[in-house]
Length: 129
Image 1 (cartoon, rainbow, N blue to C red):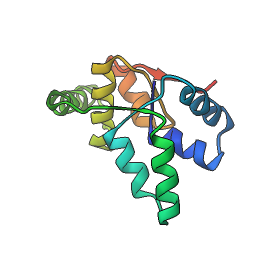
Image 2: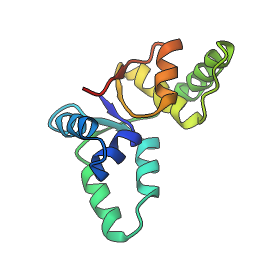
Image 3: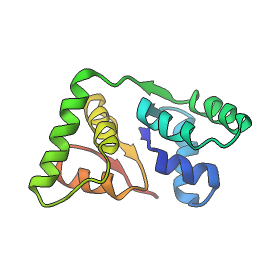
Image 4: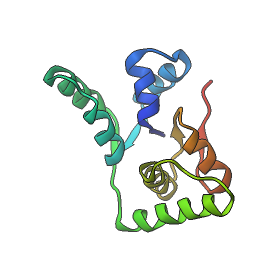
């Protein structure tokens, strides 16, 4: 399961217990991230200490590679949603979704873009317990 930055934020802030618990469970075995998710999380570090703690935490998850075809697939996901009258706010979410679909992973999230993508594409998402 890919843990999106929106779920990581709940885990780090302990702001949504259900999602935080799911992140902790995923970290016990089978958690994954993409480079985009790592970038988003590390960009939010305010101090070197926070940065180091985030790097250590993220190292517990498998880093899924982003392949060249993921970029074209992300654009296709975006266009598919647009054709259905839905606009995805960030292409980053489309890139994460394309990687998830290729790797056959679901995404744990708290982000409306992933919910919308899952309605119009093959993306599988994990609903909070």
